[in-house]
Image (cartoon, rainbow, N blue to C red; front, side):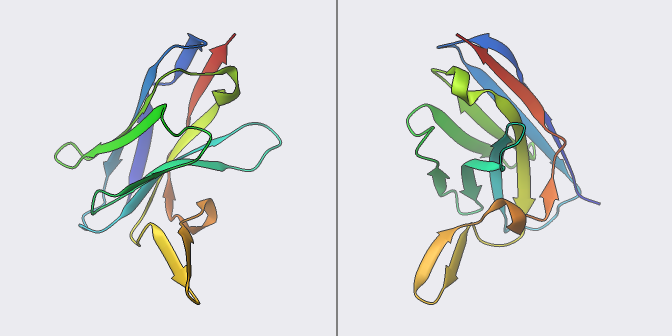
Length: 131
């Protein structure tokens, strides 16, 4: 069974930093797409960043330049380094894993893998940024 366990959330002041971690167990394939998503009550889950097994990354415009996604395959761990945090970054953060490509290609178009297209999810870690 595949399990994802996030950690590293907490409460910080605006301008602060946090590093989220997601430890993966039970997934033995070399190909994957892993992503960080966030969600606030009453809103849809929003993609923050993702990374493919080829190392390519992609970021939501709202976090570009402030957030870095990375992975350590030896430790089976996904990271999200978040700097210059803002109150609007407050949310529950989830990591997700799928065995497919991060790019979804169809009819000459392409887009990043969306939340409903990920197979496995962690339980989430809360990030709260105060002004």
